[in-house]
Every structure is written in structure tokens, then in C-alpha cells.
Length: 242
Image 1 (cartoon, rainbow, N blue to C red):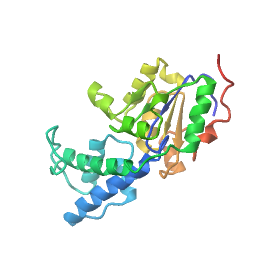
Image 2: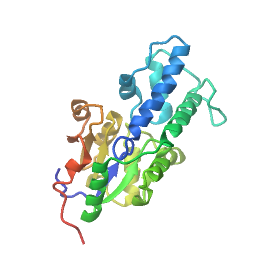
Image 3: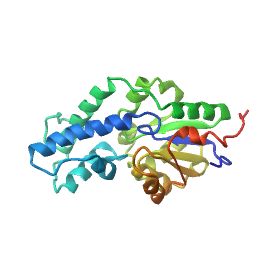
């Protein structure tokens, strides 16, 4: 990749830096498998995850998945509990399962850590831009929280009223907090909706990381480069900047 004119890299988290996407997939699978089975609805599959849920804010993903099965639930609100038959309630159920899985431990992808090290040596800034409200918890569990001064996650997006992916707003906010123009930033994503956000935002490059979405799908939605591991991006980085 050409790093000329690049001053910052904006990372998605789940599936890009940490393999939490796998834990999210497991959590969604457990929650929706049970929910659909109880109602005699067509079973949930991993294909559903990539098509309707991956990369989207939690409640938007749930509404999209339900609509695909011809279902519609009340949105619910802050007073809902995990047993509420609402979109918010389903989100809380899924999150409970995810936190149980996260408690088992999480390690960052080794290639992603090497790439973070190489970016730091090159003097290129970085931040995390995630739809998840658990981003800080995941970074802490992986021992990476101190690497990022800027984290724009689902909590920040809700507090500031930022539109979620596939809109580029959260990535724009990450660039703004770093003090770097969008056109001098690289976006790295594993989700189709995240690649769409990067492609819509006027960034220098959009990199797709194929953790299951597929090279072709990521390219079709706007990725300039698609890799299987972030270590592939180290070649071409500039010498250490002073």
C-alpha cells in the first residue's frame, strides 16, 4: 500500500485487531438460534451474520435480522431488561452471552500487533472506531487499551448522536479527534458495512481484512486493498519519522 500522504490509520476493532468478531458471531448465533427455535422460524446461520448484522450498531443489526424473517418488535428503551421481547431486550441478551465469552479471555491477532508496532515506529497515528459498546472492555482484555488515546465506539456514537456504519460519521469523528484530515487517513475494516463507511468518507485508502466476508465482497463494496492479515501492510511503511 502507498503510504504517501498518510498520517493516521483508523481501525475497526472486532475482527481487525482482536478476534472478538468470532465471539460476537457465537453470541449472535446462540441468542438468535434460541429465539427463532422458540417461534418455529427459519434457523439462524452464519450467512445471516455477514448479511444483516456484521459491522452495524447492535440494535440496527437486530432490526435488520428480524426484518429478514418477516418480524418486527418494539424498539424498547433504557428500562428494558434482557427478558423483554423488544429489540433492546434481544440486544441485552446477546451482550450477556458475549461478555460471558469474553471472560474466557481474548488475544489480539499477532499480525495486527506487529502492524501497530510498525505504525508507531513510522510515526503514524492510530485510533479505534468500533460500533461495539464493549470496545474499551475488549481492548483492556487484550492488553491494548493504552495504545489508543482515541476510541470512538458505540458509547461515543450514542452520546454524540453519530450515525453508525455504513455511514462514515464515526470514522470522521475519529479522524477529527486525532486532528488529521480524512483524506490523510486509512480505514481498516473486516465488515462490508465498515468498508462501505470508509468508501463513503473520502479517506486516503480503505483496506479490507478478510475474516470471512470474502475478498470479492470487500472489493465490490469499496476496499482498495484486501488482505488476510495486517502484517501484509507493513511493507511499504516509511522509515521512522522524526
